[in-house]
Structure formats: C-alpha cells, structure tokens
Amino acid sequence: MTNLLFCSGHPDFYTRIIKSLNDNATIDSADSMHKCLCALSLNLYDFIIYEYDQAHFTHDNLLKLLKKRPSQRVVGVYSHTDCDEIKNHLSSGLSGIVAKEEFEAIYKDLIEILYFGGVYISKKLHNAAKQSSVTSFTPSFPVTATLSNTSNSLNNDTHKQLRRNENKNLTPRQHEIFVHVTEGMSNREIAIALDIAEGTVKAHLNTIYKKLEISNRFQIFRYLEPSSETSQAMQKQKQDALCYL
Image 1 (cartoon, rainbow, N blue to C red):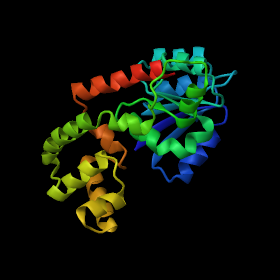
Image 2: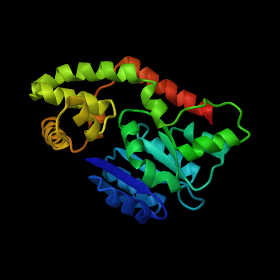
Image 3: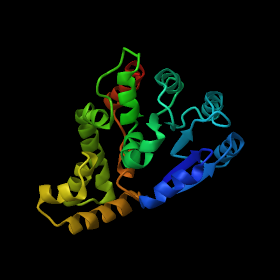
Image 4: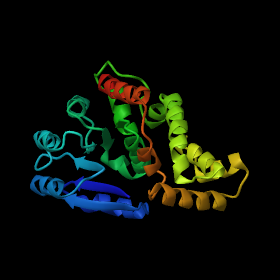
C-alpha cells in the first residue's frame, strides 16, 4: 500500500482525486508546515505531495522538510509555470514537478516513475520550458522517455529479481506476467501477448501481489532492486532534468 502525505492549503482537492481513481493508498494531509513536520515525526511516507504557496508551503519550508528527512521523495505541485523558480526547487532535491491542473491525469504515471527512482516532469511544465527564455534543456524528458531511456537496465534488473523470486514460489506464468508489468504493459496487452483471458491475468496478478506481499502493480517497481547501472541512469536523468529546465 502506498503511503502519501499531502502538504497543501487545500488537501481535500487531492484526497478526492485519489479516491476517484480507486487507488488503494493511505492518505494523510497537512494544511500547515507545522502539521507537516509533526506528521513526519510520527510516520514514514513513500511520497510527499508538496503544493507550493506563499503562506505555508514555501521553498524555505521545503528545505526544512528535506533537512529533517534527507532521503524523502517529494513532488512539487505548481499553479504557475515560472521555470527559473521551479528549476531552483528541483535542484534542492525534488523528485518530481507537476502542474496542479494535470495532477489527476498523470497521477498513476507519476507514482510508477517514483517507485523506480525516476524524476517526473509533467507535460505542461515541459512545454512551458520550451516556450520560456530558458535555452538549455533536453528536448524529451517526460515519463515515456524516463522509462524507455533505461529499458535495458530495467529488463536486466527484472530478470535478476525474478531469480530471487523463485523462493516466493511464483509459477512460470506468473514470472511472465511479472516481467510484462515491469515493461509497462496493461492487463489487456498482457492477455493478448500470452493468449489468455484478461480475467486470468487479473487472477494471476492478485496471486503475485499476495506472494510478494504488495497490494498493487505500482509496488512491483518498489519491490525490484535496481542495479548500480540502473541507479546511475536514474541519477543521470535527474541531472538531465536540471539542464532541461
């Protein structure tokens, strides 16, 4: 189960979105920085969604948060497209930057990328960077590029992890489905590739979740252990992101 903390002056906005997507996530919210830091003292979160504003959730307060939890993965949410300001925030340690109006549409892709250690830049902010006076950026950094740029490393890691999974008693068919999920395939695409019913894919996935002690397909990426090659690729992507904005 994904554990999320929403730091926002309007946390109900995000809670409604997560519930509407039927995502099986544990959600905490904080409408002030004091409450945010208190929550961090009491709980561990997979990701923090941090909506910038001029009152509570400022850049200085983000730095306080990251000082308290240096390894915490934080996504910045923006109502504006000031690329210079956003670049400064990303360089401080953000794991993603998202336009607020896009949040619902990109949520699932965002979580998938974050689970595997990637850096997410939403389409709206990508386009804003192209149109701004910022001249140095990588031309195609959004999610599809993030996944495809490291596909070979991800596949190698997947097969290494599958050998570890043998002690989890996954069947050969479950191994196949596990690999296809890590390749980003939908249940329908997996069913076509393996010539089985989509309902059969769902049944196998439920069994895989139980054996791996996870609750959804996104957590398969968290379950994997990236090799040093993949970790280096992810680090390079973050550097590319800073150049890109």
